[in-house]
Image 1 (tube, rainbow, N blue to C red):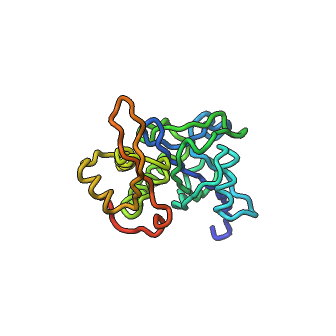
Image 2: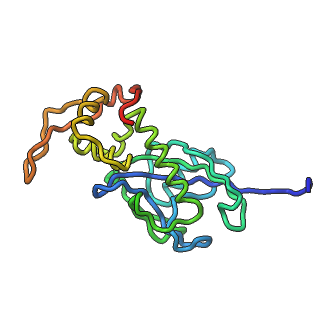
Length: 224
């Protein structure tokens, strides 16, 4: 039993969140090959011997979805022996938040389709990717309490209503409007702009932006 030789492969999977059509969505690809052919999955692939984890994640993301030049945060390593059929495969997962308008999607020969899917209404997924997405959502909610990561989902200029909606989508619950705005204006790094939304069917609203100079240094609990 001590002479048994065990081999394994290492992959990386990248969970990308965005807000699209007023829904919190995650980017998925439809697999063209077995295992789990025609099943939706998180963009991912095997790591080359010459690559470090970060470089592999960025390369795979570019190849499979045409997404590049985004900030990725290492999430967790998933290594259940049964997570991959007939093989021992460990994956190092990453997650990121982006604006969906910032990218133009495409896919490679290992996929037949790439698209956004609502986080709270996912199709049946390959491997343990449902667990990975759930873990990513949990991490995102934890980060939300310490720093204003929602800026990565919002346009450069946004209203307080749009800011609140992004938090509600991530947290999966409604927030009190008055309480949210009070905390947002005193706790966030917000810049009030001398601009209003264009008039239309709704009353024009004040526009805000995040102060990029001090955004990275801001810490503290905002919402629980």
